[in-house]
Image 1: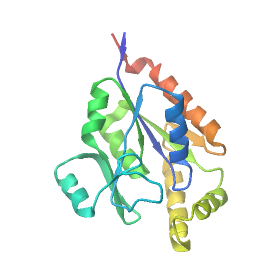
Image 2 (image 1 turned 135 degrees about the horizontal axis):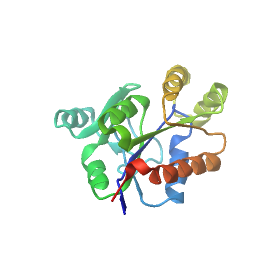
Image 3 (image 1 turned 90 degrees about the horizontal axis):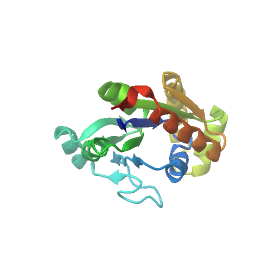
Image 4 (image 1 turned 90 degrees about the vertical axis):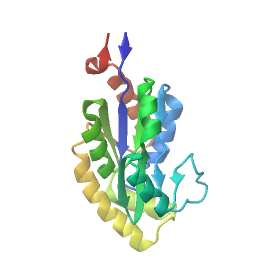
Length: 195
């Protein structure tokens, strides 16, 4: 018996802890490939090209759009972000599940393109106050940028209401275990099995 591979799409506002939670998810479950997004934003301290993001110039990114190299892309906070098409499709074709960390705009595009083969998970902070504190603590944005991200978070959380699953990230380990449980449950779904 074989199972069709699927996409697990994880979204959430900036500062909700997506990257930290996903890192723990990847340590805790096998048989899943983490897609690395491309972006035009500059690397943050400690980020590695090809591991954290694929860092591109705006010109390179726009050329990629013209060549249809992304399964989804969006301009967010003044920078482009997108999911490279080729490695994603290659992993799905080999029967490997794919995990995507993308924003709500990208999630809409993925859901439209992949339908039932896509499962969406929204990571939410415990509160907007906690989100503001997390954004301030990480120190990568000035006060104006933090306020802009908080406004965007309100909109993203409204959109998150339409996701298949909602995980509140109070504690990283618990949030990661919740997502691992979701992936395991989705692998057991009758609708993705074929003989």
